[in-house]
Image (cartoon, rainbow, N blue to C red; front, side, top):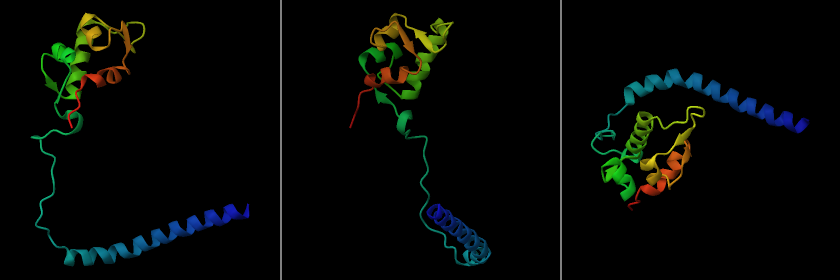
Length: 134
């Protein structure tokens, strides 16, 4: 019991010291910073719309997925959107279990010939269709 009291008292001491130093130095530091702030000549890096990154970057897709989409390269986000558009427009979602998708012939070519797919499995089943470029 005594050892836990020492630990928690130590934490309180640390937190209390942090609060007191922050409150006393912020006003003085703010005055000093106003007079000594230097503007750097470097411009901050911005994310540009010209170069999409991560899952927004178009990547080559497998022939089966390219036939479904009609394009040879596509971002992952667009692929999932187009698959969901196809599911919604053709009413392929199981009405009793909305988490389940009943695959038609087009979707079977992408989802390894499976008749039913859970909506959480879509990303896992699409992963092999994206060609890795290094």
